[in-house]
Length: 418
Image (cartoon, rainbow, N blue to C red; front, top):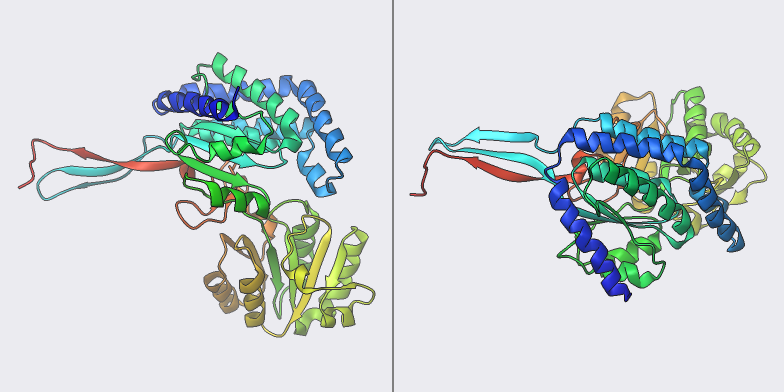
């Protein structure tokens, strides 16, 4: 089948499903999600088997350790995917919520009610768990979803969608609710981005190349889930034990994620007290440090940080380190090099913490906490569709409410316009 026809047919089926999903009861949606979760666990061996094909190809192509980590499925991660589905099922259904209702002077009542967006197209790379997270959130919010994962995960994603689709259909979801473009040809994405009459929103998740391609070619509104060039600034007078624990967690706990710290900024007054012990812990964990001249004077034997290091999202056990004179210098560095994703300050100074919160521009700003906490689960949203770095409609972790829009409802008793 011609690619254009193939993609249009998938999107048309999703559009038809979306009309039915929009009025589906919460009980049916929740039962479907629970059934999908059970099916993922039951089919775990088949999912792992499909994933092995992708991993073998990834190793043959020489993909990075971070990419392979994102790509890997195992029983634990499959269990986490299933747990995510169950958590979403337990969340309140946003569809139908009246967010405002006022009575006008003529007696007419004007309100706004939360409704599904419609068909959401998601273009993403590597992580197969995105397939389950995206499907669960879109479905609970009454949307159909058209998924286009990267070619590196095509077997894994195809297997997951098959399990979800069959379980969902058995629970009463309309056919086409969860659609997947299994054609690895890039042209499939290009055709998808033209279908503004069938797809209502595009959410890209991946690297800079993917973001650029989608935003330049889409006729459909886009909410970007861009790179995370995240900083942690350790202020003068910070609790050094707290700073050590937070910085280590932000870099090492899972370095291949968008909310992992990529640059550590340290106030000059505490650099000599913090950096040697911090560097030892990082190096023991396998982290390669790249420092500014002042950092290298304190920690011997580390590599020099080049200009490109301040602009690089490593997604690996590599960390850039810079000693700064003031918090203002730290914030200027963040403003220049940050991606407006996750930024943190570690300080005992209340006034400085308030300034940092107010002046640093990011979708999430932290005081005395790890950037790794910028996450839908951690924020109480349930499974997230991703972390939006856009400014319009949704910013930060996108949960159920962010996958809805509103419409006006008007209740009258014969009112006419004079």
